[in-house]
Length: 139
Ligand code: ATP
Ligand code: MG
Figure (cartoon, rainbow, N blue to C red):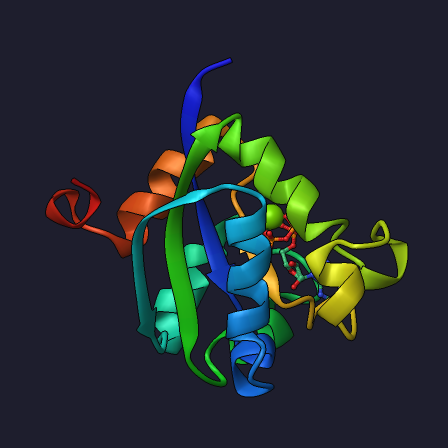
């Protein structure tokens, strides 16, 4: 299995509730390497750009407002099979349907306020990492 990188975000609901440390602990316990990490707040246009694939979805406006409501912590995570492993560590999109012990099951409060983001495929991981980090930050 190949070493991969994926984009992880600790979303504003989790940062605002002081859960960043708990979520980082899950990341360390799952043995991801944090290649790059930073905290930032998105503008509306930046959030709309990030979630452009969802622009026709009924939840797009709420989602982009939510993602601009406070600081995010964004990370490039690396390990074998990182994309699938990070999605397994997060759990299902809807915290109510997520497996026991996952981040979303433990900390998520709704399908929108589900605490974390993860890339869903190799191509989106590359694009999403490049959206937030320059080449020099990923050395
Ligand atoms: P993410 O892309 O954030 O890792 P995901 O891939 O599990 O999550 P997507 O279908 O890509 O889920 O949806 C992106 C985000 O939009 C979700 O994480 C959630 O915050 C929000 N979302 C998804 N579905 C709904 C919904 N039905 N109602 C409200 N918000 C939703
Ligand atoms: Mg997604």
